Image (cartoon, rainbow, N blue to C red; front, side, top):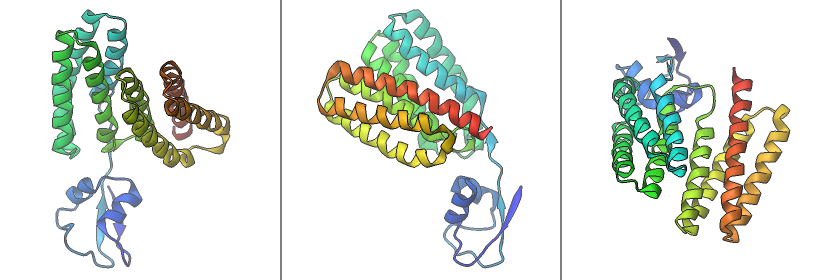
Length: 248
């Protein structure tokens, strides 16, 4: 475990941000200090090491994405089997999430999404089941923030939002599609500076894909928006590969 010596004007929040660790984990590693009391210059702060990503978290994400494809292909048998895998993985994952001090509301939100997914798959409610499967992927990056990652969790947030835009358009909710598009743009703007300039072509491609998607949403063109959202999702896969190469 690393240690840090408090400097003038330091706060626990600033130290947590500097070292890229969740504030709750920093507090847990320093039980003698309190988030409500000021630090003093020269104070020694323990900096915890983030735990590795649990394999169950990756498995839940991949199975949730596969379920979406299974439902679009009307293969409900495969969808059911993957729901059962998600449930098993979540049971194994829960104590690991608690060890990493992942907030209880994230854990309960994930459990609720899994429960709703199972019900909708059993009832073969395609749109609702896909929505719940994608909701599961929404919780993944928030949980990953508490573990040692190679790829920025914002990449996974872009993936979720791309699929969510497709769902919005399929549900004829253009206002929400635009809201999710704006959220995706904000995430991309904070993610873009983290990518090395040697990937400038991929950055330009993602910029263009984002722009084109925004235009199709603004024009409320159903098929173009679906197509452009899928193109964006393909570009997210490229970003994931880029960050993996850059940070490994």
